[in-house]
Image 1: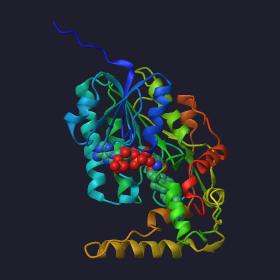
Image 2: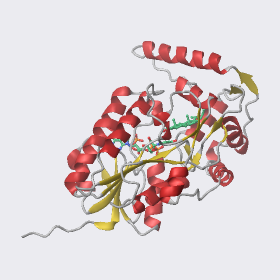
Image 3: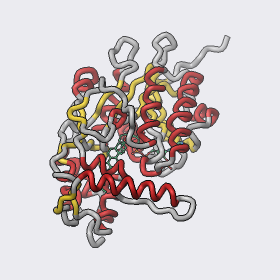
Image 4: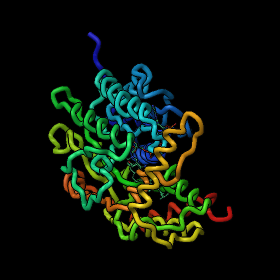
Length: 345
Ligand SMILES: NC(=O)C1=CN([C@@H]2O[C@H](COP(=O)(O)OP(=O)(O)OC[C@H]3O[C@@H](n4cnc5c(N)ncnc54)[C@H](OP(=O)(O)O)[C@@H]3O)[C@@H](O)[C@H]2O)C=CC1
Ligand SMILES: CC(C)CCC[C@@H](C)[C@H]1CC[C@H]2C3=C(CC[C@]12C)[C@@]1(C)CCC(=O)C[C@@H]1CC3
C-alpha cells in the first residue's frame, strides 16, 4: 500500500507572490526557514529557496503543480483595484478563489491564509474603530470590494476541522512600503500633474495606513497559530499599524518627504464626490470610443474624505499581534525607497 507523504510544515505556497505584499511575505518566510513555492500570473524576481510557477488562479492543474508537498498556502493574488473591471474581479477573486480552495483540498493542504481587506465593511461612510463583527458592506464602493467580500466568505466557509482544512482571513488596510505600485506612485503622479493642491473636506478624517512588514507579520502569526484547537479557525482579523492618522497628514508627509508641496486649499467633500461620480460615468459611457482614467475616482474620493480606521484588538488577543514597525519609521523607510519618484528626479 502506498504511504502518503505528509507535506512538510516548512514548505508553503504564496499565491500572488510576485506582487507587492506577496514578495515581502516571501522574503520574510525565507528568513524564517520556510521554502516557498510562488504562484502568480507573472514572475517579477528570482530568489534562492523559491520555486516559481507561472499561471492563472483559475487553472486547477497549474495550481496543483505549485502545491506539491505544501501544507500551508497564503492567498494574496488579486487584480489591482484601479483596473475597475467587473468581469476580471469576478473571475479572479471569486472563481479563482473557488478553484484554489478545491485545489488545496485535492492537494492535501492543511492551512489557507487569505489576504482579505478591511474595506469589506466600508460603504463610503465613516467607520471609526470598526471591529470584525461589523456586517459586510451592503453597498460596496466598487467591484473590487464587492468581490473581496465574496472571496472572504468562500474562504471562511471552507474551514472544516473534520477534513483537516483550516482557514483564516487577514484584513489589512491601506498597505504602504517599498515597492508598492499603488499608493505612492499614484500620489506622486497626481502631484506631478498639479492635482495635489487640494484637501478634500476639512482634512480631519482619520484613516489606517499599514506598513507592509506589519501586514506580513500578521499573516505569519495567523498561519503559525492556525491549529484545530485555536480560536482563529474560520475567522477574520484586522491588521493595521494601530495608529490612525489624518488622511491628509499622511499624504502630506509622503509628499513633503519626496520634495513636493503639501496640499493646502480645501474643497467640499460632496462637491468633489459628485464631480468624481460624473467623470466616472462619462468614462464608462465613452469607453468604446476613448479611454481615459480619472485620478479622482469616487472610490478614492470616498477614501480621502471619510474616517476609516479599524480596531485590531481581536488580532492582539488571538494572534498576539503588535505592529513591528511604527508609522513614523514606515513612512521614513518608504520615502527613502523611492529615489526615482523625488521631485526633480
Ligand atoms: N494594497 C493594499 O492597500 C491592500 C491590498 N489588499 C489585498 O492584498 C493582496 C495583495 O495586494 P497587493 O500586493 O497590493 O497587490 P499586487 O497587485 O501587487 O499583487 C497581486 C498579485 O497577484 C497577481 N495576480 C492577479 N491576477 C492573477 C491571476 N489571475 N492569477 C495569478 N496571479 C494573479 C498580480 O499580477 P498582476 O500584477 O500582473 O495583476 C500580482 O502579482 C490582494 O489580495 C489585495 O486585495 C488588502 C488591503 C489593502
Ligand atoms: C489622488 C489622491 C486623492 C489619493 C492618492 C492615494 C490613493 C491612491 C490611496 C489612498 C488610500 C489607498 C487605499 C487603497 C488603494 C490606494 C489608495 C486609494 C486600497 C483601495 C487598496 C485595496 C484595499 O483593499 C483597500 C485600500 C484602501 C486604501
